[in-house]
Length: 166
Image (cartoon, rainbow, N blue to C red):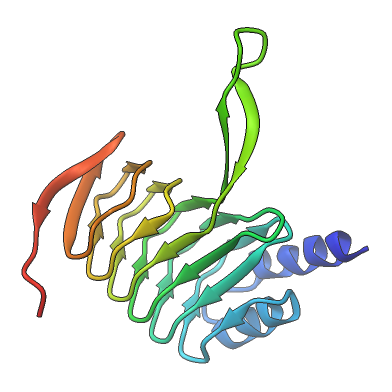
């Protein structure tokens, strides 16, 4: 029953116009998410699965983002982050299986995005952590932990630059 309620609420998240930030936060809170009152989540946002979501203050989530959680997994996004449109965050993957089925046993992990990060448009985040103050180039596939104050890009993403912390 809970899955059906989340599915229906997620539908409303998707169809609300972008300017309805307050309504979108309210619906996410009904779904069990912890969303700061200054977070702005745009139209087309979808939250799939039964896991948790936490979004910090002054964070902006672009249009048509898709977040996938499962079980007790959690996606945490810090304060002052910018997540570009059509970005995917997925807490689930698989170990490599045999040739009969390469998608082996399921791996469930949290995703933690530190404060002040900028995630470029159409990036896919499959790693556990992106350090504070980091930049993920548009269209990147992030498979490994990103250190704080680093810029990564590519598929798979690799460190391209380090920034000095403030």
